[in-house]
Image (cartoon, rainbow, N blue to C red; front, side, top):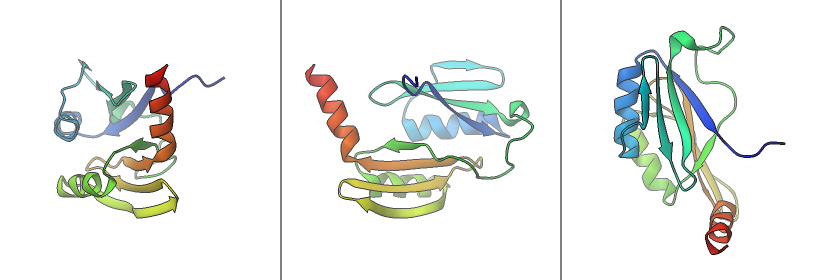
Amino acid sequence: MLRGLATVSFYADDLEAAKRWYAELLSIEPYFDRPGYTEFRIGDYQHELGVIDSRYAPHSSANGPAGAVMYWHVDDLPATLERLLSMGAKEHEALTVRGEGFTTASVVDPFGNILGIMHNAHYLEVLGSTRQA
């Protein structure tokens, strides 16, 4: 039924500032940009991270960090966490070992979105198996 992650959407009151912040974090420019919306393709599978002007958020959306946390795999979790914090993100959940090969952390970006990061051994196994096929 669910085929794969298509787009993760974040909202920002200041879309231009969010676009610059994510372009710096990801070291890439958005591949798609139009008034009210910008989108980055990131990672091994080119998943989409969309940043949307918060004027277009559903009326029932929370006004602060809330809801599900989407975790992005990173190779060096402590270094990535440190970089995010140095760029103005605030710690949401400290670095936490979840089990052998699984460590997570999350931050709230300067625009109020929760950004989860994880070092995930299973992700690396799946990535390795798809590259060998």
